[in-house]
Image 1: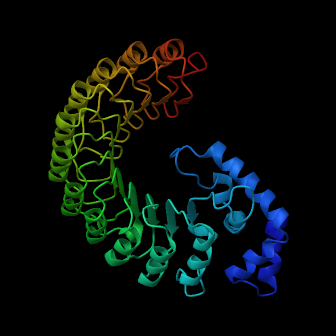
Image 2: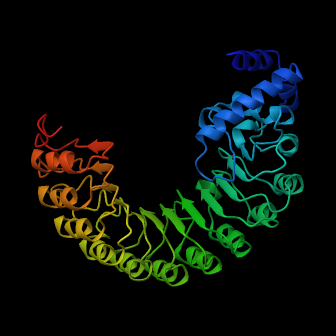
Length: 394
């Protein structure tokens, strides 16, 4: 509460520059050291993304005042400069909605071993001057994860940020997405393991993804949503990245042909999300996954316009016994008790099951079988089952 009140008071009297807000928070070195130590303990308990990277705890990163406090306290405590993440809400865009280079310079002086940079521009541009500050203030080789959302950014600015680092993960969303940006960054990041291009709204195309994956032969995770990406991009992914383990394709132009190509060559696949593919993806490709990808743990085929049916889900049950997550919501009667019973019989590790909007075809019979044979279940969605799933199954 003290942090929030202090910020409100400062704003009320017109003190809104970042260094002044940071300075006011550090009332004494012993106080700052205690805060830094407490935040580090919380972060170590919550951080699961990478064992070699310590970021802010979620509850800290989600509160702008607390995030700024965490940054400035890095200069104090028994373990100094432990933070390796800088979320943008530790900074404040100026009145023109630009991201201020001076703010970045000040914050990065507190976080010199930056491993993860997460910028949500909220419409503001990520300028080359900001990129230059990030490059200058960051120790070479430390930056591994870059996540830029909703910030207009040039390919040159992105290359400036990542050129001295061996990037492992790149995520671009919204206005940050363009074929040129994706291609420019991946061209200088051959060690990239994860690429996420989301909310692209037509700014990412088949050619852009093809150019990217050809530069990243070690890619293991690919996420593309709301993009004009089609089957021939998946053929290139399959050829260039046979070690792919995670694939998410929501609201794209990829069809059965593309998913079948992935299944044929990416046999280590563990995670497949093709939800909201409408009528493009159906039993033909999901059966191919069942036959070729025995390590599959996660499958989301929600909203496939009745193209995914009992036929393929039954084969998933027998072919992918390690399955932990299954979502067949919005199947509108195409998935029934028959395949859910098969899941219960063959997938004892199931933790998440979504069968919402099944038009009464998923009933107490299969829900009871899941309860009896899937003891690890932690999530169950039976909404919209037209009264077929009752108190008995629940």
